[in-house]
Image: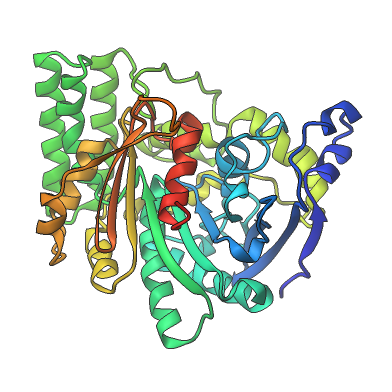
Amino acid sequence: MELAPRICVLPLLLLLLLGLSTGAVVDLPTGEGKEVWDYVTVRKDAHMFWWLYYATNPCKNFSELPLVMWLQGGPGGSSTGFGNFEEIGPLDSDLKPRRTTWLQSASLLFVDNPVGTGFSYVNKSAIYARDLATVASDMLVLLESFFSCRQEFQTIPFYIFSESYGGKMAAGIALELHKAVQQGTIKCNFSGVALGDSWISPVDSVLSWGPYLYSMSLLDDQGLEEVSQVAEQVLDAVNKGLYKEATQLWEEAEAVVEQNTDGVNFYNILTKPAPTSTVKSSLEFTQNHLVRLYQRHVRHLNRDKLSQLMNGPIRKKLGIIPQDCSWGGQANDVFLNMEGDFMKPAISIVDELLEAGVNVTVYNGQLDLIVDTMGQEAWVRKLKWAELPKFNQLKWKPLYSDPTSSETSAFVKSHENLAFFWILRAGHMVPSDQGDIALKMMKLVTQQE
């Protein structure tokens, strides 16, 4: 059963709801700021939450700008929380206007997926998604509902942008969406997918950790040997199709990296990771390697400050969150149930997208470790796409976020329907680290520049 969508004005209503002083309203961005949010029951006992912001460009109507769906990683990271308030939404986690919000150049659709993430929830533990196919089929149910209810978006160019594990999910979703559009089961103007610091080929990431860290003076010769040795064990397990064993070895590889680098931050090698509070949940009764993986890769997406915002003022504002559902409350279960999918590659899916003519963008932060750029380049070289040799022969071009500055912000290479952006001075969360060039990249991908 679907609930009626809610519409309100952002950000004035939000700030008034939070009881902030009228002085805080003065600096608000102009524009309508219309929002809509809702639940879609994608399967029996599986309810997915989405939140849409209409574009607020002072010179253009939302109908003249693209629609961008943002997918977070984890799995178990919330788009409506982290992607929205920490990366590209109109307000930051302090509820102050974000200068580099993507909302000035696109309408933004945040979806909490897989089911159980963020404000999405399941009624029965057997309902969690366990593989990419289920993640994609659930999302297609949501998108079919969304475009049927919001017909004003059926002809607007629609792009999927993603980050981390969200990129792997985005690839699978994009392929199924392309098929659905071709078959006429979903009416939308699907125009491309962007894979940011994406877990497309996990083993290629793990294999590149040693050389990358060594080149950055974060491993010595002995450390390089130790990291490379365990990475080869991960490769062997993946080659044998032993994906759960590969997951355990992946965690061991991370432990070896931490021991040899004095605890390098997997999300930005130039910063120290913030200490995490103890996770009190059903994770305590599961295998230790999964606990450690969850704490490294999902816990920080649900940090205390953001959780208090989402479970307090935002929950009250939305008004449709069930009483027994808390934001992020099922994130650990989402993560655990996807264990068998973690180390499976999705290179073949990207190949299918390219062969089908779908626009594919790969972008990566220079300072990311967990999905370092070397690993991304490695799996791109494995593509069977017929145009890949021509892509490889091209020289990259520099990009500048500030046209008056000579400081290079990124490099880009593009041929036919494949583009690759090397984002400088950014870690895993590109829009958080380099908001200006991330916004410029989005405009380039959506053909606004």
